[in-house]
Image (cartoon, rainbow, N blue to C red):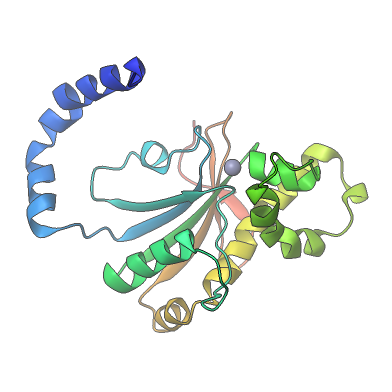
Length: 213
Ligand SMILES: [Zn+2]
């Protein structure tokens, strides 16, 4: 049976938001989507970009994966590239102007890597997926230098940095960034605090944005 929670939620959407934004949906259907901002976020159910940024339909192109990772540009590797395909669609087909890599506190994917947890299943996709952040961990140095929470937090930030670096391995991202037609941003959402930190491109520091909660 289809979850009742979804039926109820859908009813509320149709009567509320859809009713209010009917003309916007119709316009988007007719003219197509033209979002200027792409967000690469985590699958985590607490970190929904549309909710955090109070986005209307058509405003954000969102791709979510475990731990908001942008893989390196590897067109020849014999595996599927969901995130890279979404990136190509956003940058090449839609002409996105901003890409935001949105990390967050208490990320299960980062924790999985940091604690070197046993494979979740025989198939074990997560271990391989999360191994992509090994360079970020290597840059941080040995675990022993930090307590577990501090290490996890540092790795969450370092992994956003790594994804920003990996974005620049895509030739069409790099050329647009260099031409000033595309900006890359790092951000970090504190789940409990509701605080949003944004990476200062000059200092590399993550700093609070807006008034905050
Ligand atoms: Zn996460």
